[in-house]
Every structure is written in C-alpha cells, then in structure tokens.
Amino acid sequence: MADLRTPDVEALLDVLAAIDDKDTLFALFEDIFTIREIKESSQRLAVARMLDAGKSYARIAEATGASATTIARVSKCLSYGAGGYRAALDELAKLEEQ
Image (cartoon, rainbow, N blue to C red; front, top):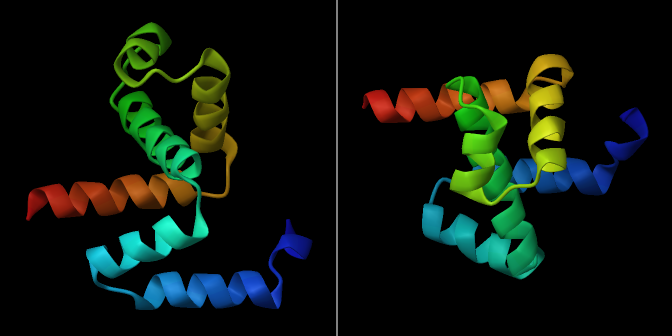
C-alpha cells in the first residue's frame, strides 16, 4: 500500500483533515465521489459499527442491504486491517458521548 500514498493522496488527506465543516466536507464528497461511492462507503461504516456491536451477518445484511462479501471484507479489515475502521468507530463513540 505504500505506493498508493502518493503526493496526490497526501494532498487529499490534508484537505480532508483540514475541513471541519460538515457541509463543506459533504460538498467536497459530492464533487469527488459518485452517489454510489458515498452510499457504499457509508454503508461499510454502518456494517463496521454493527459488527463491532456483535450483530450477526444476517442481521447486518437485513439492516444495511450489504452483501455477505462486503460484510466479510469489513470484518476482515476490523480484525486484520490498518486500523482505520477502529479509529473511525472510536471517533463515533466519542461523538455519541458528547
């Protein structure tokens, strides 16, 4: 994955980290990503939340519409990935405590 972290990717990361307004961030997402990409990405985060809460694949598929393949991929990333989902889930937990 090291070859994926190009200067262009770094610039995108810098921009995403710098924007603190949800509306501005959403506008950027609308411009950069397709509607399908936004929906699929948010679905994966929902899947990660449900997996973390101990929900079954069947329950997750029913609630989110995600395929078994997507659920398995997210589960694998939660267990063996780079830690991105864990960091996102921790941030969501902090926000919910506020």
